[in-house]
Image (cartoon, rainbow, N blue to C red; front, side):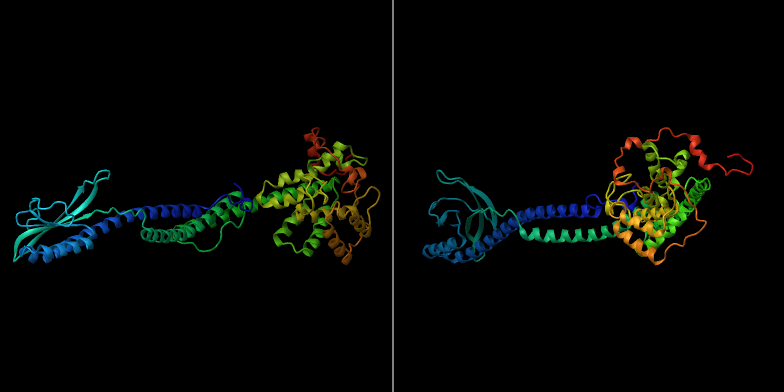
Length: 489
């Protein structure tokens, strides 16, 4: 699993995808209701028109009853003509025998049609054939009996064209449906975000714990289903932290013993790691490193020579000039130390500092050729502190004084070391110079070289760095006991 610090968000979150899906669904539901609402509205308009025609025909029949009883065709004709104009249709008046008395369309004349309404009004839809070259049209015919004195004396027929409504979309229904659906979507998004945040917190905690990171579970209270999960994760975190800390402490103790064995056999400078840690702590305090970073830097400084345990002792003890293969083997010790430390999650930051301690500020160093601020800050501090200590304790003929060592660091600022950190380090050393000791340990640097190589010596090929001729028995020489009294050297 990838630790939390290295994970990146890919795409949209579950809540965002859910909100988008619900919003799209809400839009389509609103569109569908808009179309259905338009059809429903058309039917309602048609029903209201039918009711209005029936009421109009009933009122007209009541007005026509006395005129038809007196056979006052003049006034009846005027009344039906006005009604025709108002209803925009056709009016027919029939007598008791079902004969057409009046037709506003002047078509039927006195044709016999027969009474159909009987005792109650009725409506029917018929198809009227059009004239030549014209299509047939649908019409709604309202039939109302004409009564005078309670007795039917005829029938009134009102024929109106059935106009089909052309409304395709009802924006009122669409707006209401969309507003209601979006309200539900917003509510669901808020609830989803609330639950998603809790699920994400628990998931991140489990991933961090699986990756071996500490501080994976937050102590804030959870609710409902997440209460037991939070408690279980906190218990798991405490158990894993305790176990990882014990394993890491044991691993560090073994590494320290390995470095002490190298120092006892004079394969590395005695006390180099401790002195480097003290120098680095002064510079770390000056740049205001966080306490956790200071702890990791201190550990990296004390284990600065750990990787040399995997270098042949003959190379570490050689006083002449090293061959290119031997030099490459020696330069690989930071990588080897980092490979053994990074297997422990709590030691990975220290392993990273050790790995890049030989990077050069101009980018010509190793193992990854990092340049400038791309080199971890801890590695840049470690490189300056380690170089200063080696310059003042190890040399081909004699160690340098602290002023000479600072001058040497300043000559390499901007090429090997971070110029800003070198300036701060010079200020710190000048404030409290190291006190020279008569019995300080002095060790000859393998090959008589400086702790770093000059720019002219950097051109190396990775293939030469393979130290295939290392032997297991040579590697184990660093763990041999010190010679006892009476033993021959």
